Image 1: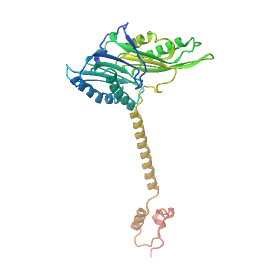
Image 2: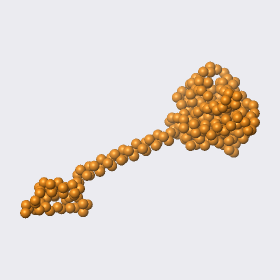
Image 3: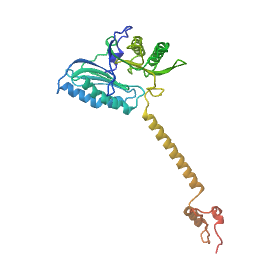
Image 4: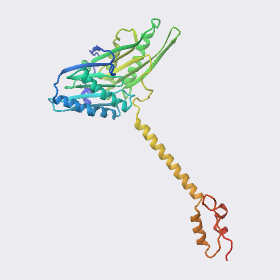
Length: 328
């Protein structure tokens, strides 16, 4: 599935989003939507999904943007899939999340050809048709966490301001990912709110902005809980009274960078060690080398060699002129 399929869509100022309220799952997903018709088992479509589940998690985890699209099969039975991981997710965690997502998707929407499923660190969508249009996106919403203290009159304003600010930063970011926090330390009301907002890598800043603005402009479930999250296929945000994301400047924490640093550091240390060894040999020639030099220069003379305990010539006989006793 080409990235151009959603880059070319016009940005619509007003989006119509159908919202599904979901509860937490013991397996990790927090929301899902079933869509499309049914497929039978066994079938070619099922085989195509199996192939996607075997290859897509690794493809996403190895992508610098933690995002990948893939299509498998002929036109009649083709299965399209799109998957991504949150920008601060490690590659191993990303792969593990998406592998589980394929399993859960076929369990909660058994034999359905289309599904989108959402986790803390990843999301997965697959279907028999390409259907990514800003005006037709469905969203999932979940509110949880501790209740908002009645004395915290400024909570709703603080939350709305923080979400809007982080959403704007995400749309302006080249990685379409941003985090932020805002605290209140008043005597009667003390809390710190944390927010993360992101969009599908590759979409335009304008599309990201419109998607997040619409997503964040509608109120939450009840306005009575401090935690809230909402997502569509193209964008999502999350608000919690605790830090749930990693402190990274650019999003994805790349293990490859650390590997390069370690290898480069090791090479530098090795070079230093070799230079020190060369310097030591230059300053302390071996007894054999010095002996050969002395015997060559002083043929026919009686020579007294003075060796230190380390097997090198003593400093007093470094000069061949001093390394003999007599000419007899």
